[in-house]
Length: 315
Image 1: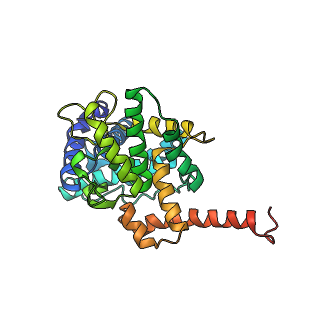
Image 2 (image 1 turned 180 degrees about the vertical axis):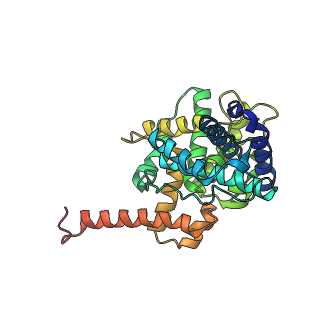
Image 3 (image 1 turned 60 degrees about the vertical axis):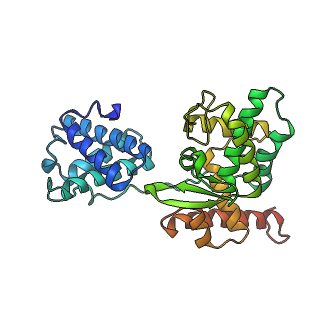
C-alpha cells in the first residue's frame, strides 16, 4: 500500500478498501492509485484539523469538501490539482455510497474549480524532424552510448509516430510489438486496449532497438524500454531522454514526452485528418477531449495567415 497513506489515521482502512476497488473494478493505473491515495490522505488530515473524521464518512458534509477546496486555493494549489483531488473525493464517496456506508455522495454536489487552459508546447514539423533526425547524424562512437541513443530514438519515434501517452509507451512489453503487421498492442487509460499503427521510421527504429535491447535488459525483463540498469524505464528517465534529444538537435526549447503526442495530433489535424480518426489514434474515450487539439491547430493556422498573407496587416 502506498506510503502516502501514512497520515490517513483511522481512515486508512476505508481508503485502502477504496483503492483496492479502484484497481480491480475500475482498472485504475498505478499512478492514479498513488495520486488518489495522497489526495485522500490530505483530505483526511485537513478534516482532522477541522474536528471531523474521514473514518466516519456519514458525518462529512458538502461544506467540508468546499472548505477543503478553499484551503487548497489559499495554499496556491494549481486548479488542475484541485480538480483531481475533488475527483478523488467524488470517487471515494461514490464507492462508500455503493457499499451502503453513506447515503449520499457529498462531493458530487461540489463544483469543479474553473480551469486555466494550458496546452503542451507542440513542436512544428521542422523542429520535430530535427529532434528525430539530428542525433543520427552525430551518433556516438562508444558502443554503450550508441545503444542508449538507439533506445532513445525508438521511444521518441513511438511518442510522435504513434501518438502514445508516455505511460503507454513505458508500459509496452516486447511481445506488444508486431513489426510484420506494423502495429503495437497498447494498454490505454482504464485498461482499454487498442492497436496503434507504426510508421516506417518507427518500425526501423524499433527493429534497431530490439537488436540492441538484449545487451542492456535484465534476463527476465519483459519491458520494451529499459533503463541503464536493465529494468523497465520510468517516467523521470523518459523525460530526461526527450530533454537530451532536444539539446542534441539544437532546439531552443525543451519539451516533455507528452509534447510529442501533442505534436502528433496537431500535425495530423493541420494536414486535414478527420477528428474521429485522430480520436481513435489517440485512444480518447470522448470526442470532446480530442477537440481541444482543433483549437490549437486553428491557432497555428491563424498565426501562419498573419505571418504570410499580404493583407493580414500583422506582419
